[in-house]
Length: 113
Image 1 (tube, helix red, strand yellow):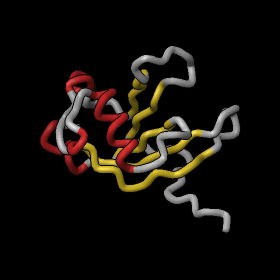
Image 2 (image 1 turned 30 degrees about the vertical axis):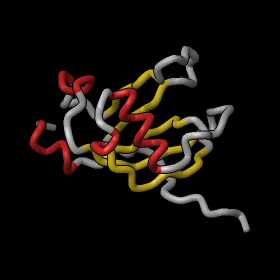
Image 3 (image 1 turned 180 degrees about the horizontal axis):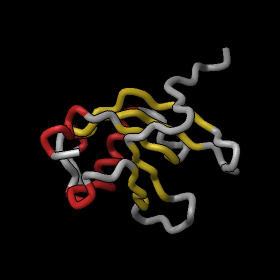
C-alpha cells in the first residue's frame, strides 16, 4: 500500500480493552498509540467479540485513517501490525491492526433487551 492510497484503506483494530467501547474512545487510544491527531482516525464500528482461544472478551473496531502514521510508514506493504498499548506490559495489552480481515469481524453488538 502506498501513502496515496492510505486514506481509502479500511482497517480492523482487534484486542481493544473492554472499556474502549465507543468510536471516540477507539480514536483516542489509536491516535495515542500511533502518535496521530485523534481527528485523523475515523471509526465506523465498535463491537464486543470473544475469540474462542481468548480468556477475556475484547472489542473490535473498523476504521480509516486520514494520514500515514509515522510508526507504520516503514512497513506500508504489511497487512497486520502489533501495537503495544503504552503503559501496559502484559500479553493482552497489544492491539492488532490489520487490513486482511481474515476470520469473522463483528460490526455491531445490540443490547440484549
